[in-house]
Length: 252
Image (cartoon, rainbow, N blue to C red; front, top):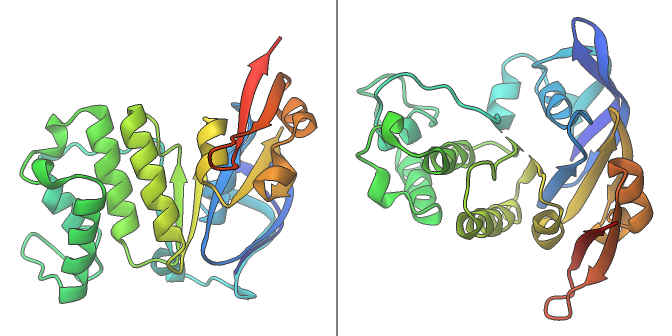
């Protein structure tokens, strides 16, 4: 279990998020939603201690994460990845594995298996020999998401993973992420598309102005009143008769 207790964080000791407390169980795909500037990215960075923690703590199974343990337990894919070296896609995937030290690093059988699984899941086979510098934005995004998910970490944080992806790959990526989360991991992703969040996530974190508005099941969080509070817009919240999932349509 990932436990967040009274977490307040920001930049240069200035608050961006305040007093967030959540318990997230294993085997869940959790979406973080909220309008621009609501603190979604800062919340994820605070879990990883990439921003100033003003107060509060992050616990795993009731224990604080100490020192370099954070790199073993967490994987993180930020909104933007700046890679200025002419590495092939396969080299990028290899670098995500613990035993890989340099260009001549030897992967274990398990590491090779993880990489092969990611290549298949994210349709990366045709890209393996291509330079990361010569990929489109969507192709690069798929590589970096796959890289993060190929690491043997218990918790994966994805900041706007669908950015730059077409609708086909948005659906494929979220379907695969959902499946992977149900095999013993916690995967947390900030998401702008509310309908995709409702379709694929197990739980939703709804944020507004740096605070937690609601955390829970889709039907508990994605209601007319909660969305109105967070986004300031009116939405019709319906139920898809085909799969019994929620969907949202804005109206004026």
